[in-house]
Each structure stands twice: as structure tokens, then as C-alpha cells.
Amino acid sequence: MACLLETPIRMSVLSEVTASSRHYVDRLFDPDPQKVLQGVIDMKNAVIGNNKQKANLIVLGAVPRLLYLLQQETSSTELKTECAVVLGSLAMGTENNVKSLLDCHIIPALLQGLLSPDLKFIEACLRCLRTIFTSPVTPEELLYTDATVIPHLMALLSRSRYTQEYICQIFSHCCKGPDHQTILFNHGAVQNIAHLLTSPSYKVRMQALKCFSVLAFENPQVSMTLVNVLVDGELLPQMFVKMLQRDKPIEMQLTSAKCLTYMCRAGAIRTDDSCIVLKLDHDLKHAHELRQAAFKLYASLGANDEDIRKKIIETENMMDRIVTGLSESSVKVRLAAVRCLHSLSRSVQQLRTSFQDHAVWKPLMKVLQNAPDEILVVASSMLCNLLLEFSPSKEPILESGAVELLCGLTQSENPALRVNGIWALMNMAFQAEQKIKADILRSLSTEQLFRLLSDSDMNVLMKTLGLLRNLLSTRPHIDKIMSTHGKQIMQAVTLILEGEHSIEVKEQTLCILANIADGTTAKELIMTNDDILQKIKYYMGHSHVKLQLAAMFCISNLIWNEEEGSQERQDKLRDMGIVDILHKLSQSADSNLCDKAKTALQQYLE
Image (cartoon, rainbow, N blue to C red; front, side, top):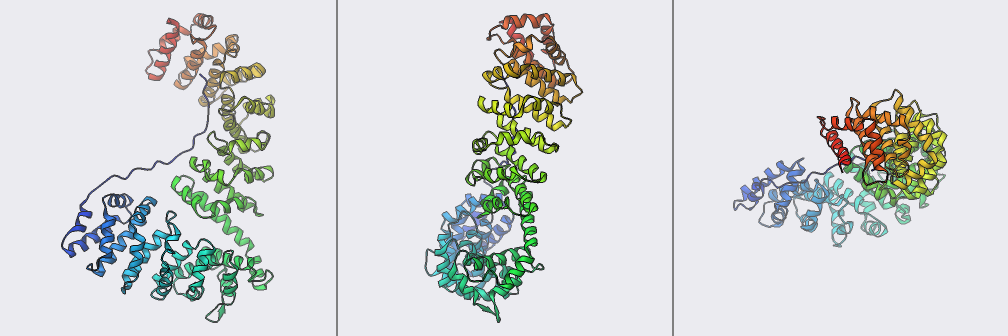
């Protein structure tokens, strides 16, 4: 049977959380309030940074009991506060943890806790609410269900820097459209949050700035109001401009730039306003550097971790931003965006979903049409992933003229581009229809195929052999291709087997012969070529097991009983001494080689 070659993608494996000690939960039911308090404190210490323990406690029913204690009038304020802290820690685990907390109706319980006069308890409840509302699994609408919640949160903004930080963070994450913007605006969000931009706490200033960016997004009413807001005698737009200065943290610069951009789009600020235009022009290069750095960071974070790749892609508008980066004027930003997408394309799940949803292949194909080599190398490497057999993007890419483009890359002077071009063609040919294989051979040309087989770059040679293996699969395809290109392919195989090549190269070459031997008519090209048969015989006795197995694969396909002409082929190979070699190999210490030899010998006995 024929063997095909496709490059696998590494996938991370999630381990299951198993049940552990129950004593933490049991102590929550102790009749002694002091023991319950100590039990909650011990539980808090046990779950810090321990996701497995968090999952265990949720499974064992800790959440309903903690919520009960948190809401009981007889519970001390200290106990209620500690319960809120533990619940917040549980929420910092996995998304499944948050789902479990939501199922237990944690949000109404915490919102009720905000009515307490105790500031520490309020802060603990807000911290937990912040963690839950910033999770992607939490519906934002839960914040707006009770009409009394938003005005109460506005009132709590003055209590402490922690209430300011947490409430602003909740608002910025739960403001998802004009309805939410209107509710927050009507309850005085602009006036209540504006003075927080001068807070001594960076975290408070940053969360307040994020609130303004989500409030102003595509909202003329908010934008027009922001223009006239004074904070310590200074207009808000002037404050935003100051926050663009390069001595400010990158996050602050980007968010203040968003605020100004949204205000400009809404017509609240004139696009030729000198204080805005001069600053943005001055920082345009810097903005490019920031985007480049952000894309590089995401590329690095997502390189080897499936969970992180998922979080990056699920970040709101992130895929749109990265895809937009492909058409940036700055070459460095375009390169960083392509690298970021390439890193994310290592995920099987994302190739099947997000990459298809955002039609990433379209801008990628545009990038490949006309770009510097440094971008082409990364973009073509990413295209290899998009052409994997399970990728929904494979078919539209084929229809967009990818074959011609990739065949052109194989002629590049840059070895990396030649490798990626042939690699992508190899993935394209995997389990492909005869028409696609014919298109590849026609566009590539026999001459170019054999130039690649004599390429000095080892990677180019290996991928070209992989392409041949995938082309020569499925009997009708094997016979068809060998009927038109058989002479040249056999010549190339002979040259490689005779040359000074690595074990890996020769193994791949023998596997190609094994595929040819699986053809109905193609196998006669081997049987009538004594030179090739002698080489197969030689590699059956080679010192390297991989080459012996590959040569054995050829022999098995040639002598298989169920196929026409098998008796004549068996006789010829017997006369060559192949049976004697099979007997020797059937005694091999390598179990795989031994089994293959015994199976082959069985064909002579049936």
C-alpha cells in the first residue's frame, strides 16, 4: 500500500482534575464559627496558585456553602470577607471554574454584599466580581439585570482606590455596545470617572482611561461630552494627549490614542486640531513600533501553548487587528503580524474555526503576491499550515491560484522560500484529487521537479521527496503519473540511491519506490529495471534498520499474491536471492523488521 507524508501539528493535552481531600469542605459545616473561619482561611491558603485544588473544591461542593456563609446575617464580617476572597481565588482558575460559580448564582450574592457598610468586605466582593465579569464566559447582561446596581456602583467609586480600580475594570469589560454605553452615561459615568484620571494609583488611572475608550467607541454623544469635561482645570482631550507621551507606559499610550481616535471619528475633535495632529504625526513611527512589539509578543506567547493561542484569538477584535496588520504601510508591522498569525496557525482547532471565520487566507494571499523576502518566508510558512488536509481554507486557497504562486517560490534563490514552496505543495498534494496533482505537475514542470531533487539544500530535497510520495498515492494516480513521468522519476530515484545522501533522504526515496510498487501497471517500471532491483536488494541488507524496512516495503508490494502477475514477480525476485535475504531478516532482533520479513515470506507459501 502507498504511504503519504504530511507534517503534523503539535497539540497540547489537558490533564483532568481529580478529586482530592474533602476535609477543607467538611470544616465549613463545623458548628463552631471560629473553626469555620479558620477552615475558610486554610482553604484560601490551599487554593492560591493551585488550579487542581480549586477544581477539587468546586467538585466537592465548596461553592454553595461559601455563598451560604457569605449571605448569612449571623456570619461575622471577617468570615464573609474571607469567603469572598476564596470565591475570587476560585474564579481565577479555569473558565470551567467560572461557569460553576455562575451556575451557583454567585453574582446576585456578591452584588448583595456591596450593600454592607464594611469597606473590606465590599472590596473583596468587588474583586471577585471583577474576576468573574472579565471572564469571557460571563454574560455582560448580568451587570444590568437589576437597575439599582449601576447607580450603587457609581456611589461606591468614592470609597477607596480599590473600589475605583475594580468598578472601572468591570465597566470597561461589560460595556459592549450603545445600550450599555447609554446606561452608564445616563448614570453619570463620565463625571464620576473623569477625576480618577488624576489618581495617584496607576491602576486606577489606567482602568478609568479604558472606561473612556469603551464609552467613546462609535458614540458621538459621549465623545461630544468628553470634549468639554474639565479635570483640575484641564480639558480631557489635553489629558489624553499628555498620556501619549513616550515616557508613559505602552498600555496607557495605546488606550489614550484610542480615546482621541474615537473622538475624532465622532467629530468631537477636528482632524486638523494642531495639538492632536502634531502629536499623532510625531508618534506615528512609535505607534508602528508599539504594534510591531505587540504582534511579536503574541507570536512568542502562542508559539507552543494551545491555551494561550486560544486566549489570544478569543480576545475581542484581536483577529481583526492582526489581519489588519497584514496591510500596514510599515514592513516591520506587516512582518510582525504575519509572524503572529503563523504562530496562531499551529493550532488545529483555530485552523478549523477562527482562521476560516476571518478568511485569513485572503489577505495572506495578497501578501504573498508582492512582499519582501523576509515577509514571504513567514507568510509562505503559514500557508503550509493553511494547506493541511483538515484546514477548511485549503479549497479556497487552491481556487485562488496558489499552485502557480507556490511553484514560483520553488524557483527562488532564497532556500527558505524554496523549502516553503515545495512544503506547501506537498501538503496540497496530500490525499488530493487527480486534477490537483496534475495541476501541480504541470505548473511545476518535470525539469523544475528534478532540479529540486538535486538541490544542495537538504530541506528542499526532503520536502521534494515528500511531494513525490504524496503525488504517488492511490493506485490510479500512481499509474497515471508514472505513465507520463515514469522514466524521469526512475532516473531521479536511481541518482539519489547512488549518491552521497543521508539515511533520511534514502529512506524517503525507497518509500517512493514502495509507492510505485503499489501501482497496478507502474510496478512493471521497477520489475523491468534490474539496476533498481539490485539497489532494493542492497538496502535490504543495509546496516540501518530504517532503510531495510523501506526496502522491505518495496518487496512486499511487488510480491503480493492477490495481484495479477505476482507469480512471475515472485519467481524473478527468488532468482535474485531475495527469498534468502527474507529468511535471514525473519531472524532479525528488530521485531518490526522480523514481522515484515515473515509476512513477505508468507506470500511465497500461499
